[in-house]
Image (cartoon, rainbow, N blue to C red; front, side, top):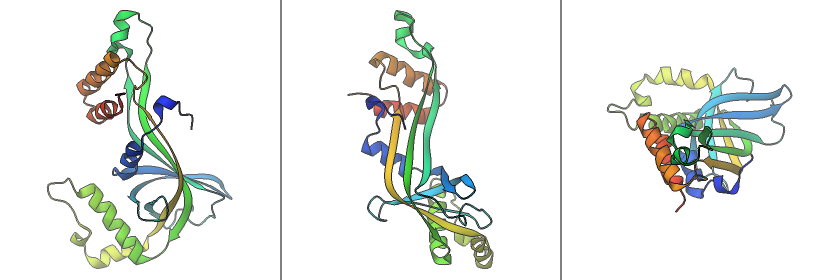
Length: 207
């Protein structure tokens, strides 16, 4: 991934991308060529040297049955947003400004491990559910559904774990703009209701 020095992700930004509840594209090279699936995941830092991304796929998905050639890749995307040059103070000064796109992303490489084990799957599904239900006023729990029903659902999926070997991450968040332009970006994003992108810009701004 092309990453100029001023857009290199700080360790805390990488951790936020890994730990935030969300989904990532799993990409593998197989005998069929490239395969990709968008999957919700949870990050477990205790696995191996660099942690692991844990997820599951439908049992009928060929991505888990076709042997992976080399490393697997999961692409995690943070908040992203269009940046209008009208938000820059520089526009009024000299007009030499153009639109751009702000984003945070991590390309997570590793060894793909298959878990066709009901206990592992049950734990993964519970952790995934908790991560997404935690902020609900009345969070749903796996235990809210009948046990036999959940057992049947678990038989229809297979667990996947990306044991991380390396991470390439980038936070393109207006760090290359003057302070007044960054102020304008934050204000513009907030005005459009893109609070998460605005917060990312604020965190990444040069000291």
